[in-house]
Length: 114
Length: 120
Image (cartoon, rainbow over all chains, first blue to last red; front, side):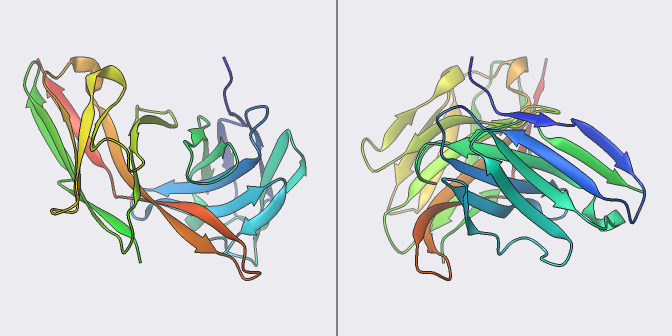
């Protein structure tokens, strides 16, 4: 069945290293979201793409985070340099046409920055 | 601004008992409302959604929710809890946002979540 896939599932890295997380949205979905989940802040929207163009990345720290969609089957979230406060679970989700529709979530990438 | 408040970060019930998870929303316009469930080490999965059709919405796994405009509530219920219902549940509201270029889109705002524990 169609699912959102994310890699890696777990990532442990040291402070200052670059981290790249990848997401493959469901085929045919043209809207992609990146969320971050922490105990303290809950679920936060980091970035929102429609038809591969960023619509909203106001939730993302601009100095170290970047999000792109090189093509319709791949979304990436990069952190450079990483910091311990970036430790969280990062989810990718996709949906059809707009944010009013059901969002299908991937399994997440658990990032630990030491 | 639209937001959701989930009353109770932890709810504990016995197997077979009624499940009631509370969600109140604030919205200046009729909202789209959602309940998602998150099982351990997994992503969120949609349980049900309200989109201004029937006020009583039935979802998967025997869950349902009722939209009550007068109470600004969208509480989630299930008549009889199963052990497999143990998970974290999130209420969410979709609002229209606009980016700097003026393009509008739907944006989900999630509540803080309620962890449901089911005892044998």
